[in-house]
Amino acid sequence: MDFSNLEGFVISKMRESRIPGLTLGIVKNGELVYARGFGFKDLERGLPATPRTTYGIGSITKSFTALAVLKLAEEGKLSLQDPVERYVPLRLRPMGEPVLIHHLLTHSSGIPALGYAEAFINGVLGLEETWLPLATPDDVIAFMRESEDWAIAKPGERFFYLNEGYVLLGYIIRKVTGLPYEDYVSKLILKPLGMSRTYFREEEYSSDEDKATPYIIDKEGKHVKGKFPFGITSDGGLLSNIIDMSKYVNMLINRGEFNGVRVLGKDYLELAERKYINVPWRTLGDEGYGYGLIVSDEFFNRRLISHSGSVLVYTSYMAYVPSDKIGVIVMANAEGYPLSRIGLYALTMMIGHDPSKELEVFRREEASARFEGAYESYGGTVRVSVVRQGDYLIMRSVTKYTEESTILVPEEIKSDYARYFTLINGAKVYAEFIIKNSGVELIYERFKFTKRQ
Image (cartoon, rainbow, N blue to C red; front, side, top):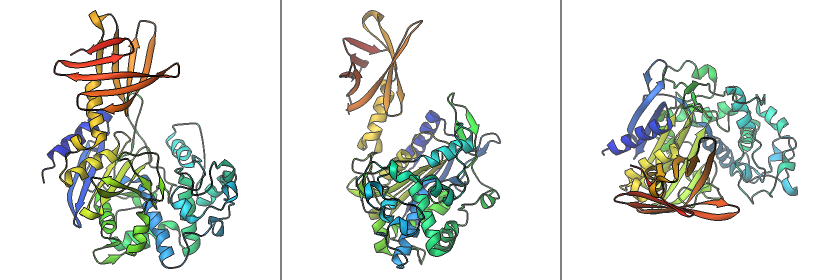
């Protein structure tokens, strides 16, 4: 298969968002059919990223934690319907109802995010003055003492991504098995699959000879060397590479087994791939959360299973399509362009479709890129500029002493027309972009603008 379009897409997005290094792997029918590094794993030393380069995988770790819990359920050592209080010395009864293990797995405890991971990472990286010294799950439990009062829904009613919940799941694994969480995951998954360069502990990772230097991209677009926030474990603490992760993804595609090694029974694996509760981010339109995995049934009439991860200095994405036996792993050593979109681009190509034409997220990107630029009204009497910021457009009007910025939110995008909106005095006001052979026109409020070439 020709991967040149994919490679061009990756380079363009790395350049646009200033990602220093990225590694991409694609699996098909049990094999790693594509593996390549892009850019630099170490800018200072000019070292290129390779297929073997290791990165932090962030919240993809949650799928490992979920499989470990499911294995204990399969063995009858716990039930997914057990109250968390049975294992954890913490009262968790939002609105008077007990939080179950199922609720922690699906982020449906009713408790909004408590921010422990964000505060911890920001503290380690020196990004904020906030300091939250939570070195162990026991520390996190102490931090959560009043958390049931923070709830705004009964368990099972609403999705709130809760890193702390997965810390509790790691604690439960330790409580039930008598092993440290990291050792149990290594025994259950890493060693049987031969994931010999996948780590939890700093002393293991520090001796790895092909690891990516972590970076923060500052406000000016400069690369600032960071460090991995060791101390996070069952909610986001793994470090790995696409070669090891290809074995993990192939195991998931093959219903819990890879190279003759069975990690989890098919029925229990497929429990993880059910949609239990809707999630607020919906790139494909129907995403829901399973057990440590995000599930969609609208990927070209196929089921797509995925998860992303970020610890600010490393980002990652994993996805697979069981029906086609294909999967993708993407890792980078900074935050920037969403790796989920690179993964979707790759998988769309793998099933014979054109991502730029057939996925709405890329049609929007292409259109918004064309809308960027300087605009002027009749005779150049009024001038504005339009720039992209994430999924939005920002329209700016600047004079010697003033600057006004207006956020434009996409509502409808076609090949030759797009409508965005903003709010003025509480009223919805539209900005319409019309693409013609002669260029781009912008209709906003009482003005017509043309884009300067």
